[in-house]
Length: 282
Picture: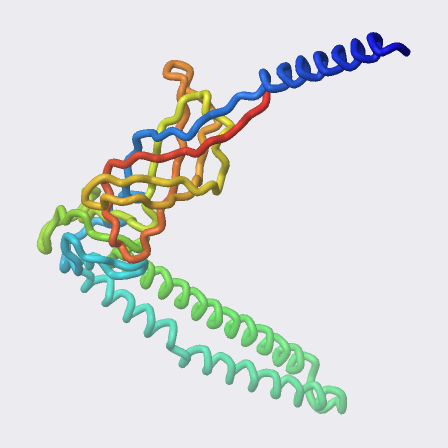
């Protein structure tokens, strides 16, 4: 191989390599870091009502109060329901009839056993033995009926207690009272009594262009720049990515969550979410 042929082959190889590199690079799309408008909101807002109608006896909280899950918020007038519970409890606890039936059944069994021994010695007639056996069967049925009566009384007690519990409204979440819409003495039907805001975590939703689809990952940490009164940058995590792009606007929704265990961050604040650089290959 002469020098000219060797140089030509080297030049040809370099040219092909450069062309291949440029071809590969042309298939790569880079999305630079951009910010998008968003809103920091309560995770959820709940209208608190009563499962039953009744007169409001007391409202235990007021606007701005912090409540925990299970805290009593509202109590309805419940004197009738309490009386029903006490009556049902007394019936469920009544053991007199049951004890009497147990004693009678025990006596009938002993009596039948004695007559069985006497019948074996031909000291009593078969009629007397059959009568004793029948008395045992009847006593057993009466005992079972008494046991069932107690069981029904216990079920009645549970129902009465459930109805009484419905007269007390508890908080379903940890949150803050946003608004109190009724007062003691008013009659509640279906209207909300209170509004609660769950502030931990806070929810952030932002709308991204379709070109960003696939560049955002579940669990990814995103910088969120909050406006006043927060006025600083925070880190939130991606918790939901819409899998359907809105054809009309060419956008999709991404939801973030922001921890707020101390309730220092308020809801209803405008922000900007900064999504970082990502590279995607065609």
